[in-house]
Amino acid sequence: MEELHELRRYHDATPEPAPETIGAARSRLGAHMRGGRRPRARRIRPIWALTLAGAATAALVVAVAVVPGTGKDSPAPHAYPPTATELRLRPVANVQDVADNAALLADGEPEWAAEPTQWGYVKSLGARTRTDGGEWLRGRPAATNTHEQWRRLDDKAFATIEKGRLKVSKGSEFEVSYSYLLALPTDAGQLLARIYETVDAENTRNRASFLRSAQERAEWRGKTPEEAKRLAEESLPDFTSQHRDRWAFQMIAMGMRDAALPPRLRAAMYGAMAKIPGVRYEAKSADLLKRRGITLYHVLDGYLRDEIFVNPKTYAYLGYRTIVVKDHKDGPFGTMKKGEIHNWDALIKAAVVDKAGQRPG
Image 1 (tube, helix red, strand yellow):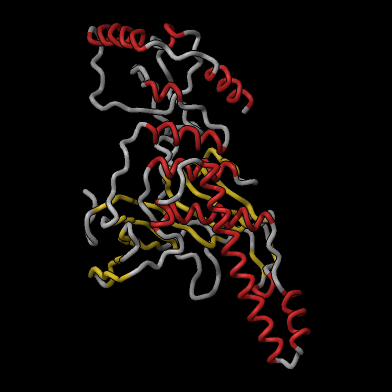
Image 2 (cartoon, rainbow, N blue to C red):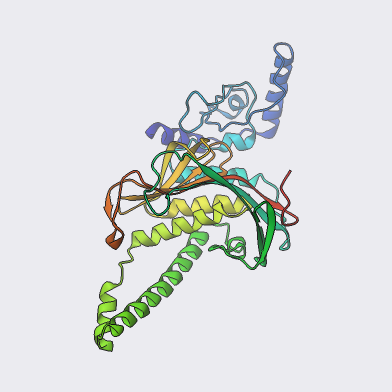
């Protein structure tokens, strides 16, 4: 890990080569390759980690792809010179590196130009994590289900496939609306501040509703209003900073799970996650579709882990899971057992289309 940080510091301190230097080097390299083995037609663009000895040398080096958790699946080294964007990508050692690389790649994407009357299409795979109210899922599921949905970007309608037919409904049934998502700032710090504002407002509403219900139940049991209020306040669940951070993490994850998003916004969401206390990075993982990825996760009170899976090359969002990592007494609901999976889904496709029922090509 220290070597990665040292490499990054050395890389960041080195000036980029001049465009004419890179161009000349590529020309020489191309001429050399035309005289030998022909290059493959399809260009692979891995994540690059280079130690640069100087601007002129940088353009001539044969780079080796470095992907978090390199193993037998990793792309083989090749002789193509990296692009300027690839040269600036960092070796990934923490959540902030993921956010920085995602932001760098997003800057190279075209501007997102979707209209409010267009539809966000999402195709996902879900695991049944509980059977008929009984045991929670442990390990990989025996059965999964594929789900398709369309959401108008102005939240005026949504659509699903039911019994093989498209059903269009008015309004929105999603906890994180498109209008909310698309209004989020693409600065990570500002985005997180907006998320925390929403979490705090929702918590205030929930606690007020809980107090009213608890007080009404106490009065119904014959308690005086003063006594009922006291009992209600004593029964109010704690809301710690860890709970607040978990809600923020979950809200960002839900936004990525249920919507097609502009790349810059998605990168800012990773940046916001990097700023949430307790969010960590794991280099090796496999999602519900067994796709190789990296993980960003948050653990609540040492027992409940929420995690998202991220493509280690494109930094696209892959999916979400909640898993119990330590036995925990869950109040009146019994005990959560280590290894239980409470949510698990994978994003297959997300895109913007012109009408409900349309699938991207």
